[in-house]
Image (cartoon, rainbow, N blue to C red; front, side, top):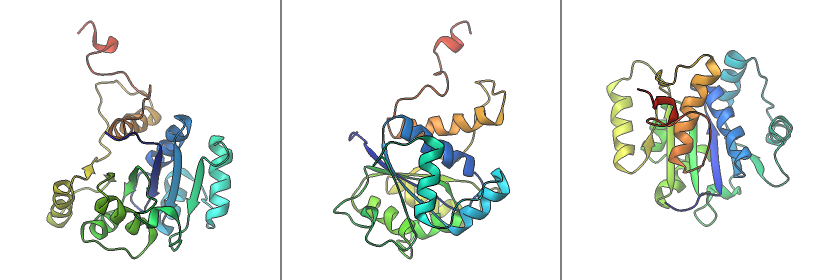
Length: 208
């Protein structure tokens, strides 16, 4: 797998903003460069789920993230939905990988059908055409046949479909533990080292 130094993280309007923000935090702590995009619906979800008011202007959101996670200078950039001159919009300067977390069914459908009506969709389209790592974290229940067909279509193109389904064999004690379980699986897909949870068959299970 190609070494991943730059990761695009897109936040959309599905439930699960804690996963996306924790992923950004972990990537920054791992020394990765992170490009962030977010939809208007993601702002609504952040307020509902986390009581967070995400700034509407990308510049303000970038400063908010930088202060919250103490990112180094030049390590973090936030782009607006119409920032067509941003690096993720072109195959000449793409990120090494992209994660849409959480991924709404609308965004998933747009990616599956090659839509590029905003920067999030275009960045995902670039990942597909450049054959780079693309991870979608879709949150919906139940799933319709349309949802499943779109996921299958993308999986056949090499996209990693990673539903946020926390396991319980690690005996989570808090919601944060369950968030970390999912984020750990995403980081594994990106080959980013972490210590978020014990490995199966490791010391945690040595006596079993």
